[in-house]
Length: 299
Picture 1 (cartoon, rainbow, N blue to C red):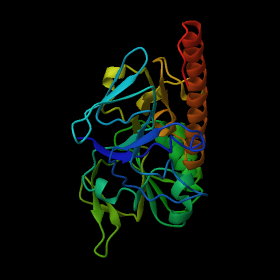
Picture 2: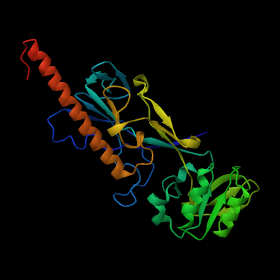
Picture 3: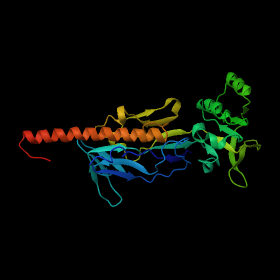
Picture 4: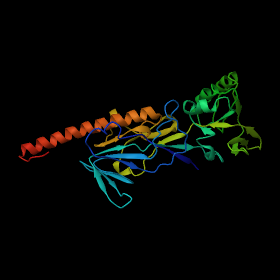
């Protein structure tokens, strides 16, 4: 069984708040199970709940596309509204490996990024719960933070060269299967229980999660997706400034860039918002010119 945790996607309307356009940000109610700090060490986006930004409209569970408008429906009150442009900033979900007791410590004793959480867990007894080849590099990064590091292979391959490199860095390797993560009496992680019954004391566990962009309600848009190498993640495929192959739809934040932290996500939202506004400015001018040529007065 997979365990999913939501991460918000960014601030899609940043950068267009000084432009006289109606912009509606839709709260999708994501639940964030992660400690997030502003500025240094900030991990992905810290503005919880922002999902879609609709230019001249609003959206919630289902979005569909027609040549000139994106239709989003239904709202909580049953309404269906329309938008000329749509910015998706639904964020991502972290998928944890199926280890009993692991999910309950996510965002506290269980971490995923040495840059986001490294300072807070430095000098602690840390364990790496391997999920695949990416975990090897994970271990080398966390070794910089502690002299007491244990690598639990969990059935993943670890060649002799890697074992020798780990030994040179003082990283202990445990090949015995992991049974569960044990909580300490006073709270937090007490250790990792092995299949044979032994307990390896640990205070922190690091795991390379599988990152997947949140796609709920967006299937009918048929937005293209892209997989990361080794099955480590899946996100919306975008071009410059978050543009997609679907006309009128942009994607920003972690839904498009799974590794983006707060600053990058905010910048992506601002850039996408500016591009959307520029696109609308051209569309407005085209419409005005067409009306003028037909002798129709438009504002």
